[in-house]
Every structure is written in structure tokens, then in C-alpha cells.
Length: 379
Image (spheres, rainbow, N blue to C red):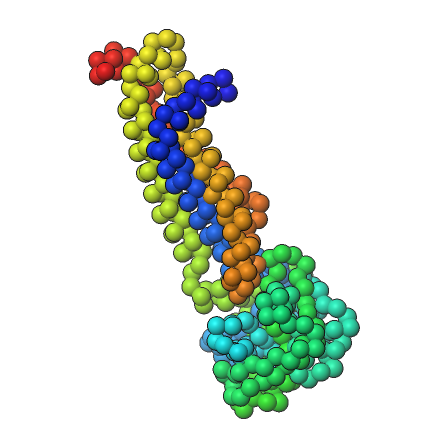
């Protein structure tokens, strides 16, 4: 710290260049924060997937249904403590841009399968009584202003006509990353109105008595329906949730690619800036060595300049991202769980410091190896 004034004086020497370099870090870390929040939003369903749950889908494809009669046979498999089911509805509310997920579910077992959600007992009982009743997530209710007693018309895209639902209750998530952006309604309502596909469901969710028994149970379920017209593929709920995310593209690969390109460009820009700064101060570095500064001391001072630039830019960029993410969440309510946890702020800050140190390393090594006689001869 005793050399901080010297470092600060060097940084202020070329104020415009230093400011632009700090700005580069600020933009990069702002983008890092936004990308981290987007990744969390898309992977939230995967992260909260239960370790004690399996998903059973049609082996051919997720969009191929399974007979509802499979439910009782799955329940008889040793190690299964509960089964529920769901079917994708795919309706449109007012406008195609108002997308949100809707599932026809078994109302009596659905929320028992998912303890990460909380439901008011009175509202759940109303949901069970009303064939046209539905439960909407808290974030979905905030998005459209839904409240208990409202009537929601949805235009069917898979099945025909307009379907109307009564909001019986609003379910909450116990954790911030829990997805509350969807709607569930009674499977019986779908079954009585749809013109085709009767007697089938989209997939089953299986609760395990022992999570360590997942491999055996999955194998027995698939063996039960082997060589049948509708063979099954049983997988962990995490893998099942990942398959939903992949339908929107490989978000994680996209985030990593963009982030890598940004930080690599930042490394080149900062490294070039520090190289120019060292070259401009060749004579001063020679004088510093002459009056007693060691090679390691010069190395440390040069890297410190780069790290301080990185730290300032990181603080500004991450602060902007932290403020911008809530606003982005309000603008894009379809991205459930859009948030920037403090741990990612820490990761971004440490990453910026590492990039700053790496960018300043090569110029610093050049300054450390600088011979006094050669340096003074250039001046």
C-alpha cells in the first residue's frame, strides 16, 4: 500500500486512456452480469429439480403421449412412492406474445409431488372443486394482474376453440429460483373437451422412496413397457428439465461463447494499453531501478496498475448489472427467475481481477527484465 500514490499518479497521467480502459472493463462486466442472470433464468428449472423424482416420457419423443393407464402400473414398481402426470396445453392469452406455460395436471397429486411450492389450503380445495379451475404462479399473476376469481380465456393452439379457466388460487415458490411463471389446470377438463388424444398424458413424474435407487427404478419402469406400442424413457427430473431448456437452444453454450469472446477482446485491449504505458515510461523505470527498486518491485507495480483498472471497471459494471437485472425482469416476465445472486457478483469481480493481472503480466515482465543501461540509451 505504501506505493499506492505512485501507482495512482501513473494511472492519472493519461486520464483519457485510463478512463476508456476502465470503461472497457465496465462494459464487459455489465455484459457478464446480464448473461449470468439469463443463464440462471433458463437453468432455474434444472437447478431446483428434485433428486427424488424421475420423469417418464415416450421413448420416441417428448411430444408423443403415453396412455393414462400406465399410472397404476408405474405405482406397482418397487421403490415408487408416488406418481402424478401432466400434459402440455399451449394456449394463447390475448396475443401470441403473451406466452406462458400451461399444463393439464392431476389436481390431487400435483402439488404433493412438488414441496418446493406452497399453496393455500382453501385455494387448493377450491381448485379441486372447480372443473374449470386453475392455479397460477405468483410471477405470472404479477405479470398480468391475475387474482383469485378472475376468468382467463385461452385460445388453444393444439386443440380447437377458446378455453376458459377460473383462477382458484396462486401458488408461491419457496426459493427465489423456483419457477412461478406458469399455470396448471385440471386434466379432466382437458380430457372432456379435446377432440383427440383422449386417454393419454404428456409425461409422468415419479417420486422415489430412496433417491439412491433411481437407476434401478428407472430401468424397471422402462422394462415394464418394453415392446409395447408406447415404450417409455425414464430419466432424472434434472435431465427432463434440461430437455425443455434445450428446445430453446443451447443457452449455456451461447452464454459461454459470448462471454469468452468479450473477455478475450478485453484481455487484448488491456494488454495493449499496459504495453504502451510501460513503453512510455521506459526512462522512468530505469531511474526507479537505479535508485533501488528491485525487478520484482517493478513487476508488482506494473501489474498493480492493471489490476486497479480492472477493479474499478468491475465495480462499475457489476453495479450497473445489479441495478439493470430487476428492470430487465420486469420487461421480460417470461424469463422466470431472472436474478443476479451476490455470489455471481463475487465471481465476476474475481474474474476481472484475474483478467487485469493476466493483461498486465506480459508488459510487467518486460519492465522487470529492462536493463538500466539499455533503457537510458533509448531516452
